Amino acid sequence: MTDDEFDAFVNSIPESKLELIDGQLIVGNGLIATKLLLREILKGWSIAAGLALIDRQLCWQALQQLYPAAPFATDDHQHTQVQAWASQFTDYHPEDLSAGGEGENGRHHWIRQFLSEQIHTVSHQVGGLTLGRDFVMRLGENGFTPDISFFFGPPLNRLYNWYLEGPADLVIEVTRPAHVTQDREVKRRYYEAGGVPEYWIIDPQHQQIEFLRLINGRYQPQPPDSHGRYWWDSIPSLVFFPSQLWKKPTSQQASWELSVFGVLYQEPRPVVSETSGLEHGSLPFIPRVALEPVPISFAEFISWCPRAKIEGSQDRLEVGDTRHFLGMALMTVGILETVKLLPPQDWVHALMEADENERNDATRKAEWWQIARQTAGYLRDKFGAERVAVMGDLVKPQPLNYWSTIDLIGWGMADRSDHEANWELCQKFENPQVYVENPDDYLAAQSLANNEIVDIDWS
Image 1 (cartoon, helix red, strand yellow):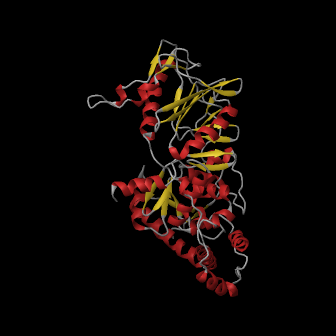
Image 2 (cartoon, rainbow, N blue to C red):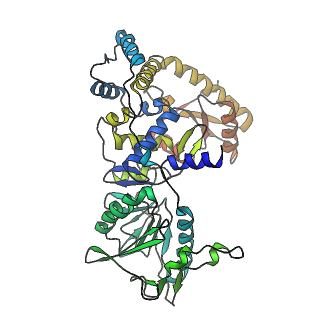
Image 3 (cartoon, rainbow, N blue to C red):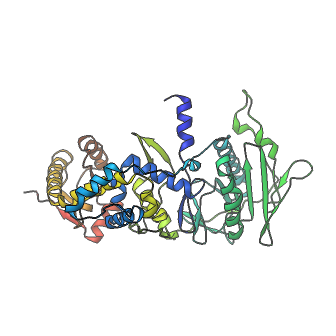
């Protein structure tokens, strides 16, 4: 791939940013980017990945509503008619979702990283903490991940392991052309209502900064002083030099040698982290997907949301835990709108294939159990396992699906031998994938507590 092709690819996918706004999972610059990423996930991972998380009957209903003239039905004797219609269907026009792409960078990444480092350095002198973009700021039932946020703690906010409860003392968004509306209008409205005292909008393309200060519940623009300096009201001893931000380091000067902040002496204010609160994995992953969008609660967002890291691998996009992202995106978009993202014939083929797999589930499970027993013997002979049990989808009554794997728990294995075993199992098994966990690990311990395990007979 050439540099130009790589840049075109990066600009065509959404920005790596996941937020919860009004119960919706928002990617990058808005709901259109959520739909764009959902479509790319379904194209790369296959529609079967989505069908594994929803009621297939609802998909048939969606197809019937969208294409009422088609002979849709789930009865076996009508499958031939449905396939014949799908093979001849040509009246499909995909929605243009290009506006959801990341768009021009405009030094966005460099400025965000540089400012984050600068504020982190300042925090050693004035106290407080700087949070990265994956850390959530909770405003009511919304969860935002600003480019940069800085906070001091109570009484304005409170820090938990997975999120900041309440508004940060300072929020900075480094905008880009495709995100102007999201940062200048949408975010401004929510940050103002949520009580964020200082909101800075940095525009690298035009080398402009808008300083907004919350006064009597409304944001008021604040200009720099006559010397071009901006004094932050919450920290009178801290001064910001906007013009310094646009300077590029010389060949003899490293970027960290530039300084955009000046600090008079101030006693640092310590920050205390709370030990309670919601955390990742607090709730079991059970996405509630319906024909129409279903709101995501803040507790679900914290429990399920993957790290906002969009990567390309083997002709498909990955978003942290892609399965979790997919479930949340389906809740946000709803099945009716999701079905519109790909041609109906693709959905028909995937639905019929899923129906066939379910009819053959007993045979498939028997084959997987044979693999599990063989693997147990391998773990005993090579890694000294004294006991092996099966957990996960293989011991549940529901049919296996796209995301199903063979999940084992191994007792008596040497320290970290489960890591070596998993590496070897990944080389040996691709479909299905086979994993082994130490009984003290989170998933294994959770299954043990719920008795969702079945021992493999050594005899």
